[in-house]
Length: 376
Length: 106
Image 1 (cartoon, rainbow over the protein chains, first blue to last red):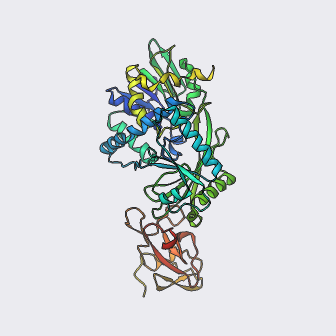
Image 2 (cartoon, helix red, strand yellow):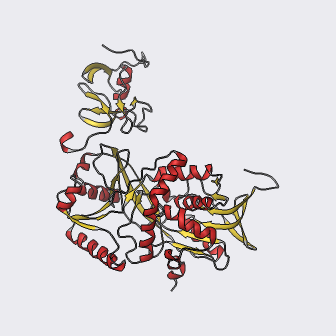
């Protein structure tokens, strides 16, 4: 850290604000485009969805009211294999990607029927090109023998999968630094100043000059976006997560509520609460999550919990991402989403390409993701 | 027969002596000790093999944080030995890899 009369000044072609899964993925993609990139991140106490999420690379049901988002999620899932291979090859970190399909388990017939209707409508919307299966109890039991006797069934998405999100975060940071990227944890960024076609990022005593700036600061985008003529009306939505002891492998497929990691750990989750910036846990929600997990997999009754935590999703009013370049200050880009794991491969690929070149692949339909949709 | 141990009990500890079994072997301990402390004092171990790579481990932090001291205590697998007081007649086994949860293997 610089002190005295000359505060720290840094230069890069692109400054990415935020070093979570979103910022790192975009930054890696920009490096692949040959650009020099600095990431300005916060320290360990930052509100950070990247360290609390569930690790799903998920497709089924995403974008049921937004076909462009469904296409983007599927594109990213397809790009995930090569993305993970590249990460492992360059860092030696195995992020434990498995994409052999995933299950959304429904406890009641009514829930299963609603899910079927939603997925049927998506298949029609995508002219038949939307793979899924609806499994009744027997069909589900054939896939997952440990399923509970009262479970109605599940929907099966052959393109779904999961990774270890902490190893992913670490591998991406390692690769970014090995590529020559500068990753600073001295944030938060207090101000982003457009300056005659360039940008100056203020962060305490430090200043960063860059030709382009990418806002990937999660919930922090809300305050930063207006400084660049953009809008990011994102709000926190809390999910509580339970971790149980490591046990012998019994669950091959990720589900929307329970998964078993590569090490044998059981992770349970999928609560949704509007509680502001409180990332704590509550007994009633933990109990609800545990009860549902035991209904799905009765053998979990004997498995003990080790810890629990809360993490804050980054939610827009409709739940879909914002991708937008500032009209007022070209070169300023906004990336806000809550599916930083699923979309990581897309962010490192076509989204980074769009930011590097200013030209988006028309098949991405990025105009669908502008924030103006919220003020119409 | 007790193995040599790097851990010695303080002479000032005059609590009553109890006996319990580790992997079938009778071991003496002092009342109030944790299972992990008593097993270390007896010079026994490694007390578990890891769930992923099956590398050998023994009690380490002794305060409930590191989970290195997982043992099978009175039939309960994956139990933190440092968090359980040893009692007369207790049956302790080493934890081999990940705990089984399937019905047939419990």
